Length: 607
Ligand code: AGP
Image 1 (cartoon, rainbow, N blue to C red):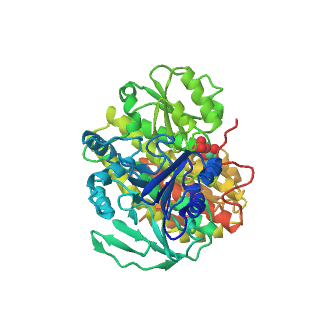
Image 2 (cartoon, rainbow, N blue to C red):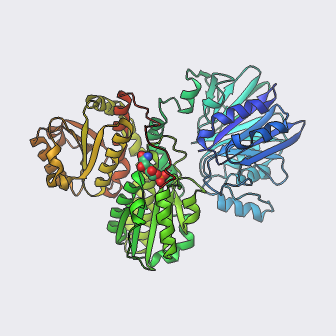
């Protein structure tokens, strides 16, 4: 997720864009860049790191020009370097592009363009767009953009300027948000309203496949070369709300992105007909992985729960013995490993000290190390031998939500990758891939029920103790649900394997201690029903997370939250969503500081 701002009007663009881009840094802050077009000449400024680090240097450049674009980057393809910072240009430095999204077929396009003589300066997918527009340019910038985009597979929010057509800014959108700000004698383009709200509250939301041409004297918006007359809307949000996409907290915004996170994680990686997944980050170790006979998964907190789900996935579907541990414990163990052991490290930030310490330990033993990481260029992504980025976008709230969904989706893909190297048949590989492709829509179905979940949460907000129970794939989900509730609402909550209730936890169950039972219709459903009955027999209230269509459950549970049916192995990816919403709405009802809960930090970089 990156930030884009563009300006065309009668004012100097520099201070307007700088203020707007700073508003978008929450979307990505690896690097940033500007391009100004002034009197037919282009001026470029790009730096690694946050704006604040080099803002004075930028201001001292005193860039002039009433036409400009700028970008703050959240790296997905290509490391965090100045060359990879946007804007990207064509061979001659006459066309400049800023982009938010993923160009799935960039490798083949890049090869083709290089063979046609184009010279690339970066390792990003975005630069392909600049050269494609150059290739198709025939005097009219929007026509070149339109032809270029017809060759592209993927997603984009795009702004383009050129010294060869210097009186316009062209913008285009497919799946990545982009809005037009309609000001007084000026027009802006931005990834979200927070960047332009200081200039205008009049916006036009671009729809997929629309191309906007902005000039000083007005604008036109086209879809398939036909002009679209669009409605101008007025934003009622204040700036802070705009940064949160109109939601009250980053945490809710990030939970609501969980369907998109699955979509982005699988994008360009699903080979449905072959029943395979394409994970470029594992190419370099593809052969070594064939000899792996044991996998240890290591993470902390929520990431560790992802590891525990991954353990079940790998054993059941890749026939690989697997175990998990938390980073802070693993580093003091004497693990039994050998050259056929691999370690998978799971981390949103890629900077968790306990996880990195365990990684260092494994590297010293010469074990193959893989990373499942969200932040590109983070320590974990650099220290592991190979890995897969989860592509979940920046996660701002301290409580990790969408990152977990990205981790689970990625571990499912790794399971297919390794399973198909082993005994997993084409049919099973295809079945899992088909289900993964459906998953974003299933997640959206759950997110649409958030008002119902809010009502249930408000019913239970005054309880002081909760149990979360689940079995097999949903045991780690129970642990995650309990962690989410306690870390943002400060209510005591514990997760347990359903079968463990009678070994102790049941002593705490009574009318004052509700139980959330994650019991989709799967191989352990009947056992979970027995656990629910154990709770009910002690007057405990039960909130069940159950599969759509299951009418039986309503007869024994006090409240039911339904989730759509999917493969048992993939259920955790969506069964966790209602638990994130439940925790959020209880904490919200209690007026907690949800995005920054007391005593906690987003990334625990100390041991
Ligand atoms: C999750 O809600 C917590 N904030 C915390 O447990 C977190 O998952 C843990 O610190 C690991 O962080 P990482 O994924 O960045 O390594």
